[in-house]
Structure formats: C-alpha cells, structure tokens
Image 1: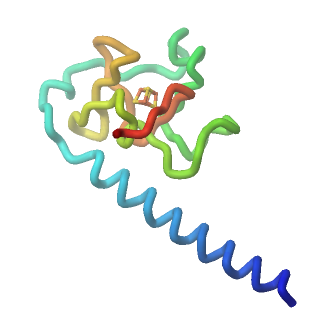
Image 2: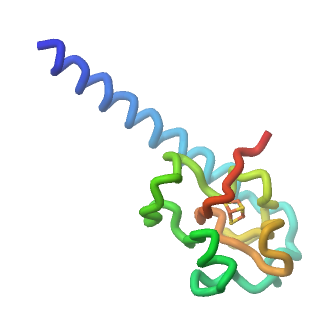
Length: 109
Ligand code: SF4
C-alpha cells in the first residue's frame, strides 16, 4: 500500500524534473553572441572531448556522473551562441551543443 504511494510520488517528481530541464534548454539556447555561429563545432571524437566524455546530446550520455537536467546551456563554462551552439571555456575556439554535456559540467552560479 505505502509502496504504491512511494511509486506515485516518485513518478510526479520525475515528471517535474523533466519539465524543468526542458525550460532550462529553451532559456539557454536564446542567441546572444552571433559570432559564436562561426566557431567550428566540437566533435565527439576530438581527443579533449573524449577525455571529458563530451556528447552532443546530453540525454544520450550513459555517464553515471551526469545529473538529470544538466546540459551545456546551464553550465557556467558555456556562453550562449546561435543555432543551438555556443562557446565553452574548456574548448577554446570551438563551440559546443547547448544540449550537450561533459564531466566538467558546473551549474551556472
Ligand atoms: S564544460 Fe560545460 S559547457 Fe563545456 S562541454 Fe562541458 S558541460 Fe558543456
């Protein structure tokens, strides 16, 4: 009986968490620096990207260190660009996917 209640509240929590992540992605992808569009995109096969476990689609990261909702657009090393990509301080001269992720993700202050 109480087990079923636990399950129901957990489902509610997961739904709320998913909604929050979607809002963060939309807010983070608003273009601010048009120049960022010119920067080449970081490739997942780039040695630094591999070392940091960078993925273009955070949802596809199987890394246990990733917390739900963590994406490049809400990381303090990310600057909003355009077209869904923006510069990341860890990849100088390149841009990362706003919906991407790597192990160095640090929530914006
Ligand atoms: S440091 Fe942050 S912005 Fe840069 S790739 Fe990692 S998660 Fe994305």
